[in-house]
Length: 226
Image 1: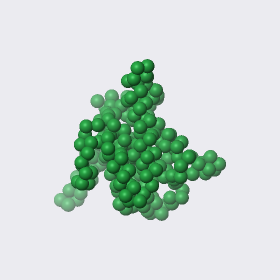
Image 2: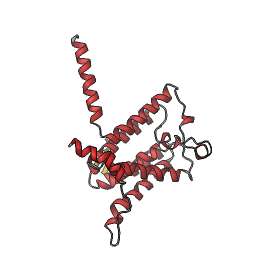
Image 3: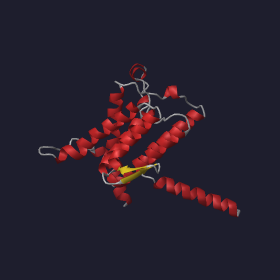
Image 4: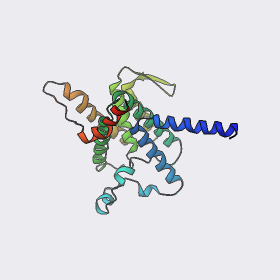
């Protein structure tokens, strides 16, 4: 093996190790989004096979749309890169910080958020739900890090709780539909209230519980690795 081949093999091994070092939920969701976009770019599938369409889901049993509508962020370009960066960054920070050692609880956030966004999606004209899901993750992270300073594009400095609203304002300036961001913020606030606010109020209790099956699937594996 030549030196260049050895260096390439070492780099490939390093990248592989780094990839599998990413927490499992973040790794799975980000990879699914990237592969979905790649499949569209290569014309293996089309966006028409992915978008959220209740009629096709119910009447033609195209159940996969409940998932694929969260995986596509448009053709490869600035919008896609921007969304993937925010998805990876805030999903990973949540999983490694707020949900460290509690992967099953993080999966519950995914399931609860996805279900509620899908339910609300029945009443609004949104065909791809991934951006709303990212807004939800950013909102939950921001509420759990209220004192964290944020520098946005090197132009604005503010505390974390303002980040979802700054992103919404950015969407408005770019001419994008802010309804998507507002939907994600609303769902994020519902989760935050049920998980962090209501249980700590007089007479309050924890309403979101994690099924034991999810704990067996995710948290037991983590304890065994430790």
